[in-house]
Image (cartoon, rainbow, N blue to C red; front, top):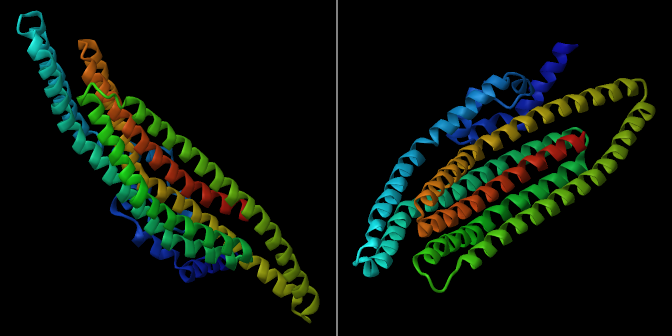
Length: 355
């Protein structure tokens, strides 16, 4: 009996197209899954890794994204030390003309070092969300078909329409709104520290808070909407499922009971397969976002350390610039984490609520 069930699950897996999901993943996500000993989306793959594999994989990704920021850290500290050395000229008679020039040049040098890194993180954000949205466009039909095959037609159709619309909307919002907005606040972060008047620090802080409030609101609304729709559709599907079982069992002569049991077996196998595919998909989504999030976290620590060094030497302009750039990177990290959370939570909701 167990062998027959395994064969049925394998047959449903092959027919669902879930095997193609692994080929749609980017190389960094495949490498992360390889370190967890996951090479397909079958239910048994989720049992192959342990906490040691997870820690090793996370440490590997962190090491891969640590070298470049450490090189830039050396440049940042070098600029801070040189600025502090030249700052000692303020005690001489020549300080009147040099102080403003020194501040201007030091901020420009620091901006020249940090601006490419900010633009690189913005590009990483765009690429990560685009790749994940492309994966979702392949994953959503597969998981929706498994949900429908398990007798949850309304839930499957709801999840398909909602997630396809959301994935397309995310890609459009990122390309047309998020990226130009991030470039704008990045420019403001630099400009406000190059010029003393007018000060744009208040504008930058307002935009940063606005982004976080908007992200929180959008995540809350979407999660609540998907949860309510899932609960309603599951109730309707449960009623339809019971009606099918009752009809088959009572109105099909002779073999009605056997057909009802066979139907329940197929539904149960589909549920197992759906859960396995969903869990591996959540791990894959996490793996796709992990490198970009790790870069943001590393850069946040690097800038925090750099600001501490700048504060020690009392170079206020550089400290303000480093703080502004750190705020921009925190916004990028917030967008990445919010998008990742929406994709993972939506998959978890349909698996848990959908039965």
